Length: 181
Length: 181
DNA sequence: TGCGGATCATAGGTGCACGAACAATCGGCC
DNA sequence: GGCCGATTGTTCGTGCACCTATGATCCGCA
Image (tube, rainbow over all chains, first blue to last red; front, top):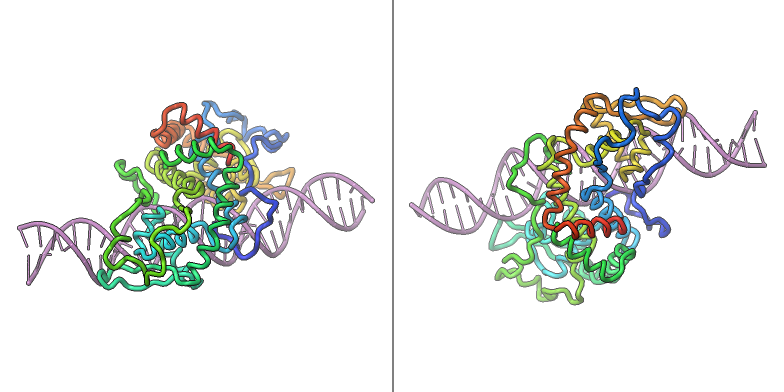
C-alpha cells in the first residue's frame, strides 16, 4: 500500500505490479544464456518459488489490495485505515491495543494508522479514566458517517476480488484461509 | 517484514501479531459501553471486516511470512530476497525489470531488494552490452551456494504453512489462489 | 534519418509490518 | 502496603509495496 492515494485510479487496470509472467524472451536472449555456463537454466531440483503457498498468498493479497484501492468509494483510505474504521463502528470504543488485536495489527502499526485517521478528523482519542495507560478510540460523527457510507463499496471490493470463483468455490476458499490464517 | 532479522526466532511462537481475537473484555468493560450511546455495539448491517476475503488473505499472508522467518535456515533473508535468489538460480541471468515481472515485484521494489542482496555479496550486477538501459543480474558463487542450501528449509516453510490442511485441501487452496491471484 | 512511443532503471515520498527497547501504569500476591 | 511481573502506548530502525516523475535508451516507422 502507501503511494500516492490522492487520485482516483484507472478503472481499466486490475493488476498489481505484473501478473508473474511465466516466460518472457529475456532468459532466452542470445547473450543471456548463463554467466559462464556454470548454472543450468532450469532448477536442478523441482523447487519453484512462484508455486509456493507463500508466494501465492502474497500475489492474491496484492491483487485484493489493488482492487480495494480502485473500488472503494473513498480511494484515499487504505485497507488498514478502513478496517480500523469498521471495527470502531462495531465496537464504539476501543483501546489501541485491543483494536490491534481485533484487526491483527501490531501495536506499532496501530500507532500510525490511528494517527492518520485522527489527523483526517475521523476519530477521537481520549484517556481512559479507569486505566491511565490506555487511550480510548472512537469515531466522531464524520468518521461514523464515512464508515456507513463506505460499506456498500466495500462489499463490491470483496465481490470483485472473488469474481473468478463461483459461490461454492468462494465458500471453500474462505474456509481454507480461515484454517491457515 | 522488516524489523530485526538478526536473531533466530523462538521456535515456539507461530503467530504474527495476534490471532484476531474474537472478543476480549475490553468492549464489555463497565465504562466502555459506547461514547454517548449514539453508536450501537454491533454492526447495524451485517458487514464484518474480519470476514472479508481481503482481510483473510492478509492474515494468511501474515502467518506465512512469520513461518518463513522462523523456519528458513537463514533467518536474515526476507521472503522477497529469497524469491529473487531462487529466480536467479533458475534463470541464470535476468534484467531487473524481468526479475520483477517473474516475482511480481514493482520495479522500485526490485531496486531495494537487489541492492541489499548485492551489499551482502550474493549477486553481481553488470551492464547489458546489447541494451545499455539494462542491468543484468546473476548469482555469484556465494549466492548460488546459499540458494542451493536453502531449498530444503524452504520446502519446510510451505509444509508448515499448509500444515492445518490435508493433501486434497492443500491442492484445492493452491488452485483457488492461482485463480484469484 | 529522425521522431515518437515504449522500456529500463532510479529517486523521492507515503504507508504498512514488525522487532526491540522504554517509560508509565496496573495488578496480584506476599 | 510494597514489590514484581504484565500490559499499554510510543519511538526507532529496517524492509516491502506502490505511485509519480525523470533521464537514458531502444525501436518501429514514416
